[in-house]
Image 1 (cartoon, rainbow, N blue to C red):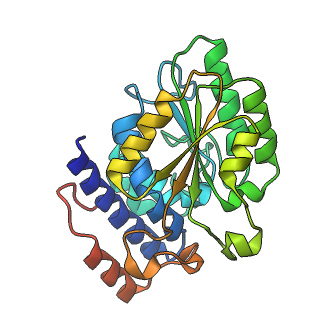
Image 2: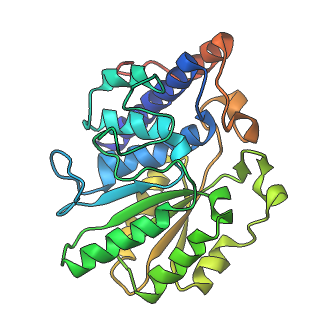
Length: 280
């Protein structure tokens, strides 16, 4: 997709998110909206993907979602990328649906490689998968996405140390740095300090990126890819606004995990124009 198509698709994904969460009055719209531009660009422009889906992921770039509560954006992008029918988005969080509140593997939903309802585990998996690619001479990249508040889980730092020690330089881990988590601002709940300094001290190559401007996302991902295979894993500190695209949701932890009511949905959709891709 060209950049105009990517921007339009990001708008469509945001429409999907608010409609999905509204329908069942359950889910996590805030972080989903903030990460929409990134995941849209990743799947529809950046990653080298092959036809179909298999769990091995050999011969292609692969992605792991660690902060699994932002499943609405993940499911929308997977569907819009052709992994399963777009119409299936209407089953989000329904009983017996493949689209559960947090992604799971037992439903065998194409595109989902790990269950990620429990935070802090995704970087360990991504590092292992990237190391396996290196050992198998598979010249493809592994991408992962993590919440900033999620870094308060200690397992992340074991994985960060592991990846640097083993020179896993085909790994690009992106941190959604929106400064918000379920209980409030991250600097109030547990201050993260300088993430750049921390990752660099652990031996990573670090770049900063605006995650809510499509061209800057594309440029940042190009910079990250150019930094791979040089002896260090790569971390992208992605600056986003929680709730991006819906004015009354932006920049506050209050929309981390609540659904819009009928009036709020109407207001949200009024800010997200109908696209040529069409609603599910």
